[in-house]
Image (cartoon, rainbow, N blue to C red; front, side):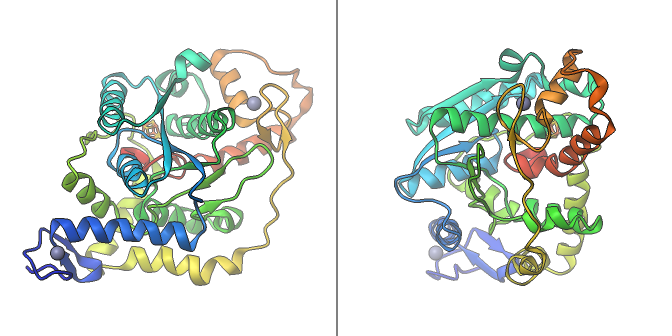
Length: 333
Ligand code: SF4
Ligand SMILES: [Zn+2]
Ligand SMILES: [Zn+2]
């Protein structure tokens, strides 16, 4: 196989582009895809302070690596989930990466800061483990970014994540969620801007990038991944992609070009500060504070609020918690 760009000997094949590349050209083309994503969606300004949500997986570390190479002021944020050896190894690779790039890493330990870890949340709460995990990540990233004075949070969602999320939303015709799915979520009252610069790259491409760059990342899956719905949608997309390379890209990139405009117009609900923590929410207490109170056996308020608010929180959770939408690349992110 010859490299499409320089005709040297190729080391990576990208089937959906019907192309192969040598190491140098593959790294070049990958960075160019990220630059294109950033430019065409006005994701980042050169002066922005960027907080990269890093999990120890290939996607988020590849993202941090590329943003640093492109000259952005990008710090990392690692959230310790307390998932035994998996979390310990994840923290180690993230710290080693930050040290190797002389980059700034912020760390938050969920149990230390909020009183519960993810396995406990799965046992005690009424939501699935991944649901509470995803909710916690989303909450902590936003809060840390606000408190640290960052302009934008960047996550390592790749094309596979986005296609799987869109498939899940479409199968259930969650039109509000479909309308909101975007590589950029603008800042709103109390919500920091969120961007997904890897949305044009497949999981295989980010894995190849990390490997060719010599980035040490956690390969093992989270031990709590069983039952993760996002994973099933990914597997379904992979089965289709195997027979028809390019389907994922057509599905998601085609949605951005032609599908999304048809879903626009869904109103963003009014946000108010949570009565417990001050983060924006559509209810009186935010979904995170409610989940946390349930896990810790606390009571946030008398039951008088009625079923309406409970239902609202259930809806918020259902929309918010597909894990890959929240943090790096989902199960492995
Ligand atoms: S699979 Fe992902 S979302 Fe689920 S518990 Fe593990 S890290 Fe959290
Ligand atoms: Zn080449
Ligand atoms: Zn709250």
